[in-house]
Image 1 (tube, rainbow, N blue to C red):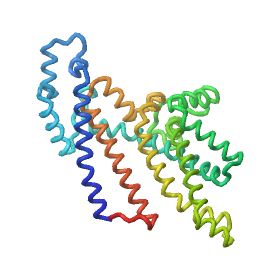
Image 2: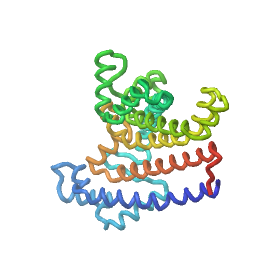
Image 3: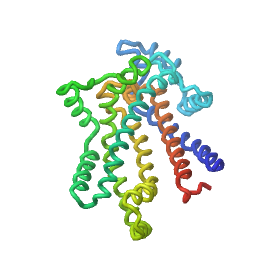
Image 4: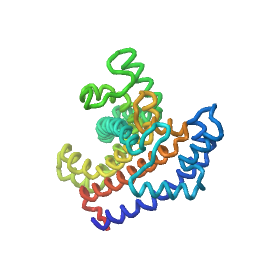
Length: 315
């Protein structure tokens, strides 16, 4: 197990190097001058050149990349000249709302999707199965921005039950108020993942129910509840947890849309603003951090599967 973890951690190095090089080249080759954008239209060429020197943009691209990687090895993500602060502090402040929104989205998707998928599998071919399958199709097909606008129209404008936008910190407003602001964006973000989880759960449970050992257990008189909970659900757990874990990664990537709609100060909205301003340091740091979270999430899933399923052996 330890050998496997060590090898996976080593595999992070080439992945992050490739990601860092790719995003560095892409953002530096995009047309636009961050110094000119920051100083405005009335800036003189001398002022722009001076800012180029201060930001290190007058150096060749290979040297800029090496300087950036050198700072990364020291844990320094750089400085944002647009936001007047270090990227470490900026990411720390914006990462928390995104992770909270993602947690609500995944929790909603799993708590709704897994039970509905099980019900559809147990009642295969019946009215409940057709109704749930249709609901999952709507979930997969519904864009998060459209779902978000619909939720605002229903729960904020019509029913006046939940706030339409904004963000409240737990330490300031408390859990109750915080969740009232997180509920709508979390549902909008996790609705597509809910549809995917319904489909995956239904498929995984049906595959287990049709296995030979399940028919043998039924022939021996094992009760339906025991058969489903102890055998079917346990063996289908790997497929279900896989799609739930991947939903976390997907929600991180899709948070920009809901954060813009609901005015949440997360990394998605931060990235959009940074791209528009050509804020190189912020964009590069966000992509690296999200890539690292994706790899770490996958590693945690692999280790968890090895603990719950003895058929899996990590060499």
